[in-house]
Length: 232
Image (cartoon, rainbow, N blue to C red; front, side, top):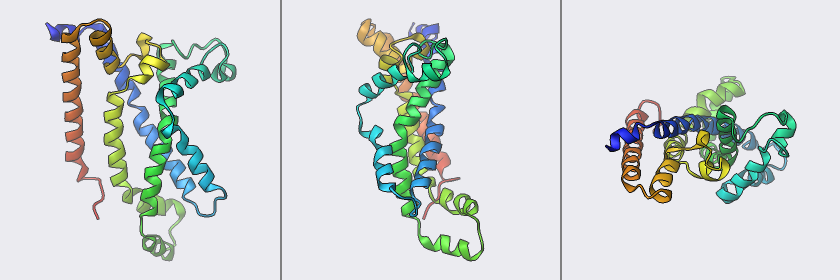
């Protein structure tokens, strides 16, 4: 009985929305890596200030940030509406809403990602770069041949935690998307069925399924980690 209900359109839509939002995980990691690489430059003036500025979203309240971003993406008086036109309904359109959530997620998670990558970069021995300078390696060559491989432990951690957090996303559906079906995730489905509608059976079944998927995805990542994660 629970299996048939989990195969209903509402749950399949929640699964599809959650998978779409997971695209923001690698995008956010790439953005955080780029910012960390920029702020790791010792010749950059005011880099301490920019580090604090970029990290601020990581220590801000999730609900407050979602409310602020909801105003930003408002098609009538929001900044995005002013830039891209008032005829684009970012908070209700099937595609634009997902894109807005991904953009908001990248901005919100960039600070924490930047901090971890920055710590990883500063932990890389300078002897690697000195040897590369002797060989005449360019900055791009040093980044892809030294920095990026040495940061794979940080990348692995961020990927695991990002996917787990993405599969459990809820605030975006409840606050930012205001419960619109195009933005409903699996956890929102569980909350709506279990807490709002008191359908504890279907909510428990969805919770167990989500926990199993998270466990399987995490185990697969750990099994594959020895093929690409650098070990000192």
